[in-house]
Length: 433
Image (cartoon, rainbow, N blue to C red; front, side, top):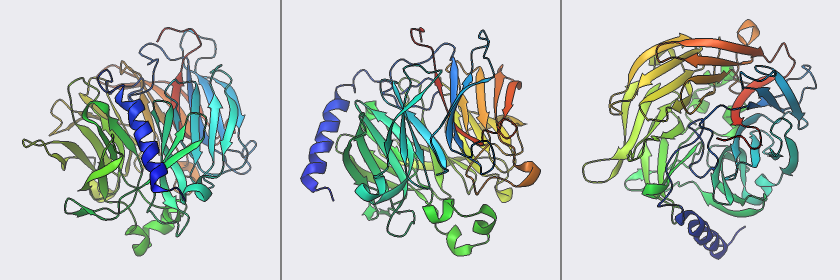
């Protein structure tokens, strides 16, 4: 158990590092969903896309793995698998995140709670250099989900806990060497008239406003359950997050809890300089929510849009905001649809395009210029569809502002790789980004 003095000291040290970047920091990223503290932004052509992949028993070596694919159309390896790195076993591989210097890529597993650190000195051949296996023992949390870079640090949002495998959880701070620094429990008490549910999912920081947003999902008991069984379990369906939390980054203390029903997932701050709003999608209610200041300067969260037909539960999963903050891609898992929303007025998003890109789709990432859109298929091993609908792939599309045109698609089942989930981009050493 970490003492209060140690946590306070860690928080002060964290702010000292972060504060130095406040004035110069702009909320931006290469594929538009990374931490604002990541350097060497890829605004040109990426050379590789790395896919964190869930192992499937009897398929290839059956192990979770990092798959590297050529992404530069001028290279011979374009649209081809150039490297695979198995980490052993199947622990529900899920999300990844770069360190602030982009040298290392952290990746987590939601079942056994292991964290793997890959060295990207040669991005064509990543190397596993560290495995962190004591997250549950050290923190009481399980299910490392979001990996969010801070200056010299990595902030990790967990999904569950060791006590009851429910949704009450917290965030963990490591240094870039993988050494534990501090932990921060998600709030369960009342703040500003709203009671926190203690759940967590994503992290989104706006350095200029000194705020950190977190969202909420569900615990191990639910995300490791078969989806068909889960939706028929009335009690289990009550155990999904319904809040977002606004934290003061300086102190790492929660300042406000917002009621956002239906499990709000990915958080995307507008990347346009001067904007001060973030958007998220609630998975179970199929709604878009906006977080911004009101006329009195108070942060508020409000529903601003609908995704598909909520009655059919399309299950919006991943979202990707454009670099100018004027557009939003939304993937809905159940119907395999990829939708584009006009965010010119973030108070009233408008769906302007939709295309079925798979029988099931999950993650979506775009290039900085918005012309390239990558899509993967897998959500969770026990939530993916069965039979012929269980497509496993990564696909690249070109976006001309009017329609998506497929460039290539890799069938991960045919290639015996597993279930394709999260993606990150890299370039060759010495490439101007």
